[in-house]
Length: 325
Image (cartoon, rainbow, N blue to C red):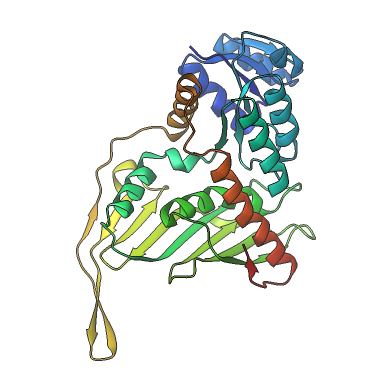
């Protein structure tokens, strides 16, 4: 069994700890907070205040990094230098250069480097991705994603960096490539220079457009992905109950001479066996380490997401200009 140390046990780290413990892989929690020591005791694993306890322990195979985003590179670099496989929460880094350095370091040492783009491991998204690749939706022309909520306000990063990585990851997986250019707008309402609302637009250059909306100042929580194809349309609503999370619409556009006419078709919910995305993600990391396989969300995938985020930031800083990738 792969033995994993968790670095960082805040709000999301607790979820990682629970899932890793349930999979029998969690050995050590590293976090100076008293609550971390208490959780370690509850889960029956060891606790340490400093990362060196994990880095210097030959029994630890891998380190899962759930520390603040600004520390991801430092912690992941230390872990890789110590010969540990690394799972790091999104984003992999705050610049493409740093992401590339982590990738090269992991490759040079023959170590697994996986990034936590959670929704890639959601059974509903995996079903949607399979439908798109099997041409069930036909030619896709639009992918829209909304990630809206009230709360989770940050001072160290804006809403695009905090909310949009998961959506960008899904869009790139559905598109199968990077966009050619990115445009973004942001509104900083609460804190100067830190947008609370952001809209990203991705142009793939062949008729495929994507729009991602992110806000932590929205009165209702919404997590919705819409995919428009010429054979069918799909809606992944993660706030719905499980058996209503993925819906297919067999809509058509008919032409009367030069005039398009909407022809609503049948709508159906897609049956998908339930499963916890985070547990599936952690199992995937364990399997990749054990089998020496490349993760689904490896460094290349994470850097592609980072490239879009960086272009979006440049666009927001330039009042919404298109930025080429």
